[in-house]
Length: 168
Image 1: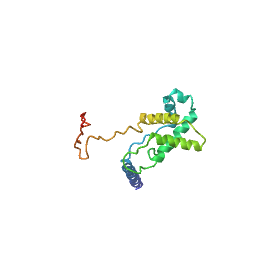
Image 2: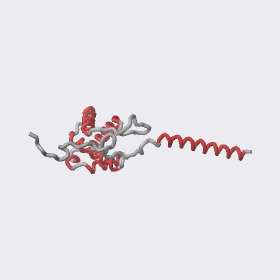
Image 3: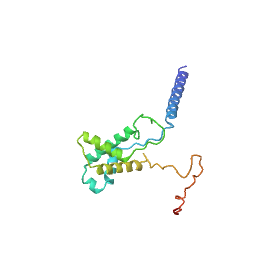
Image 4: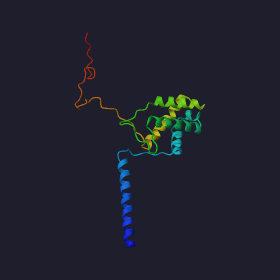
């Protein structure tokens, strides 16, 4: 009798575990694969990618501060996510480089940290290269503007077709 109860208990535990795992997998299935990065690895990559004139002006701590401020900017924009954050909308999120530089400069100024804008841009460019290298982001291709909404090619104007006639 005891053996039967142990077997029934084991089957019940396995069934509950399978249902729990299946539910979690079903919830996460539409989510894109998350890319996790190490801050130390990121810092090393970025410092090696920076031009010599920038590394001559910025310390490791300065670069690290810029990286953290820019990551905070990306998180606020919804591009970088952590833990259980779920996306709020559909489609790609477009973030301009100039907005990231401005954010870093403004937040840095609050902390009496004032790197040069071109140094901030160089660090952000290297950080984005790191994200591409680990597969966390990729260039987004623009739409094909030669095709209409129905999929049919759009008619070309004379100037696009290379017609250099001048009416006069």
